[in-house]
Image (tube, rainbow, N blue to C red; front, side, top):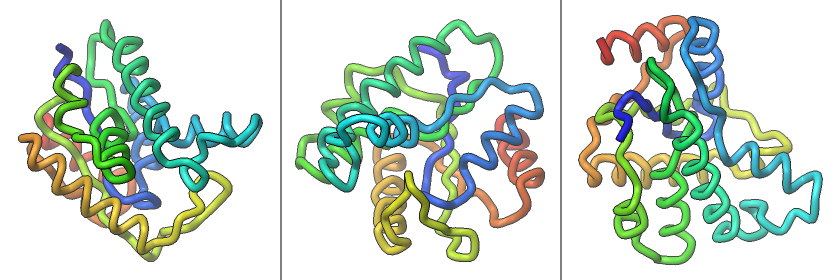
Length: 176
């Protein structure tokens, strides 16, 4: 179990990737979002596991990729920041299939106790080739994740709607 693995989760389009880049700039190890990597790969291929085509297939791939990411980063000495992770993928799979996220996650190690959630931030939300869902769908996903992380016993910290440097300071302050 590596409790130095920190999850940045929350609302799509809420600034997680920007925060991840700032943490990387400060010298921390980071792992980009599994979902975006899957979408980019699927858009180059047959596109069968795109979230807007088959959310179940997408979520299953995200679980596998998030698990691989954890194994790959297991020996990293310092904090490792993950843009989403296993819980996010398990919650997506539960949402689409009804299969228990709790049962699925039982076979995986937990992340650090503190999880940082980007709240809905309409002023910065944009869609693009990899994010095709609207803000209402993003907010519904955020609500599911906030509930799930709390039900799984994580301490959830809502990121303030401030500049990226201040957000990074907020995260690091809570981890110190």
